[in-house]
Image: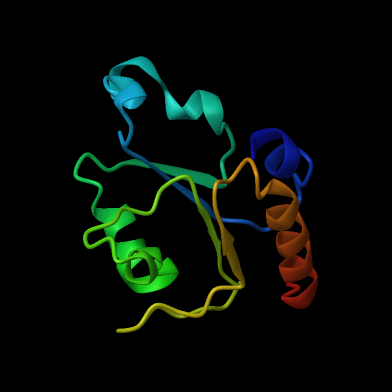
Length: 124
């Protein structure tokens, strides 16, 4: 994300919201050991730490809905990107996504392609 998008597109009008939480056994203690600003160092990025994984649960239930498809109640969405257009409005229902995918590393080509398409469709 840092190299392929943020550094490669310094003039792009983006807002990136990165939410971090511990999800796997290997993540234990990550909050104390990893500074997310070292991973995403760009003024267009807003970083959050979600101790209770509320964000991941909400996105699974309301946007990606993988838990419903797999029958996994209480599933947490993680290691995913969710792309919205420039002028979306958040109301009672979440707005329609331009694209989403997971895991981010495996889907980085699609993220880049869909982001470039969204930037050209929604110019400023």
